[in-house]
Image (cartoon, rainbow over all chains, first blue to last red; front, side, top):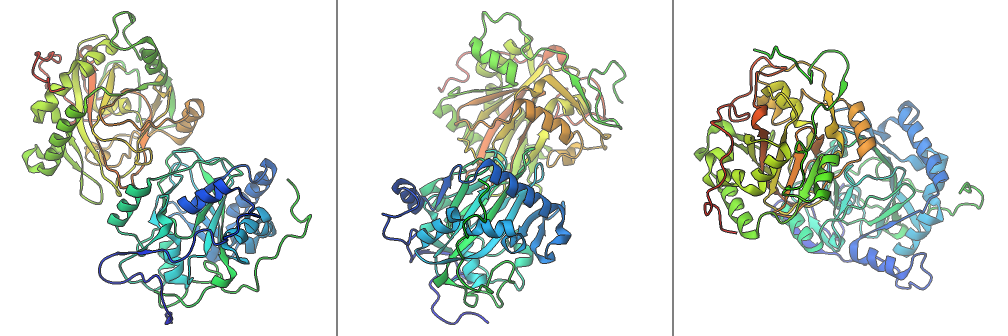
Length: 308
Length: 308
């Protein structure tokens, strides 16, 4: 059942691609006096749609997360089958969805004030996890991921009404600049690219490997890159990259001997919970877009995660 | 007919990959007093196996070369059919071979003292063009090119006896760091990776699109990268990148809106002319590996190329 209410960001239509001005702020909180980030960092995030925070997690915390992530990859049979996504050709595990529901450790990380607290401030609301993933980009054979706005998919296929969500990616390895790092187009979060083409049924089954719908047109990508350029930070392990739900991003393939791994969390404002999809016949499944959520993320009880 | 004389660099064998120490110098000329490059630059080339020279060609020269290269791409029917190579999927022209035999302008460029004079110095010999190419890496869909040593192929399939050749790539566009630039492994030119697997007949027909033989093993690549790192210069139009025939290099795919284009010339020492292939049943065709060469490159008569 498709959404029948007002759709601020119509997409997946016939005809030609459109660009729609963003209707919401990027930093929703108007009072920066008590912000967990300094003014320059918040200004940069507001302007660019992404921000790199270095040394957020200690080497010991990273080591613990990485070993858990490696154990989960090595034992996919211990995970819910549908949460394990493989590379198109090679069969290597590329992503594990919903680690915060399958590991106490990643549950705690998702609620850590360094992540959830910052998300609460920027979104100016209680928050919950819309999606989480462990991403493994293998050495030598890592595949590219073409340009896209996450919000376009979350709106069209998951029914996320407004741009009041953001992603945080915790780097579990050092990122080499040539190992297919995520590329961002600064400023692109301020325009929504309405994409051409209807959503096929069960699109998610292939789109997580290689996206074929919800793909921005080349002219829009070129115009946004012309305006904002491309930035591809290569942060060290323990860094966190925050990016707005509508920032245009992509990653090239990785043929270097360096694999990379991160833990990825999407925080959505509690007031922005999912409705029916705006441009798909059925919502995507629970492990990709969480609907069964009891309430906002609970703060960590002190001492639950204190190895740093 | 395969080579029967002594083979210093046996490759394409059964069994496990081998690494063989380089038998020749990188800079063949022992007298640097009259060098066309300063000592630091020569030292860097000798150590790293590659070197970027900036502002070698003027904007006006670049513009003229680029418009000629674009015209050649736009009118492939005016070129020898076998010299035009297309992308595996899309069909876009990826390379044009032997531009110096198909265009007076690229003939002159290949003999320009800024290129040929420097090649003569480094190789300490008269030189000729072993291969030349115009390379077009398209925006959005440019394919990756996996790690390889050019010499491995030139030795195995073309019968180039010794490491006394080098490549010069003239940048006809600015290179964006994320647009799949060539990645080099500094120092890798000092070891030859003998690759596993016999050469199929007419291997060149597919290997120019995607290489399947003569591929270094992952352990060797990892060891060389561990020792030397990866450098991916992003030179401006008018720059020249020089690299030794045995330097390990690769390029990632290009999904950015930036296309890139270069004119690529391989200078071989006159004393190092091709023999029979060392590891293939027949030599590759003339347009890929020149055998019909009258004599060393003639210097340009003054005034033939003087638009700068």
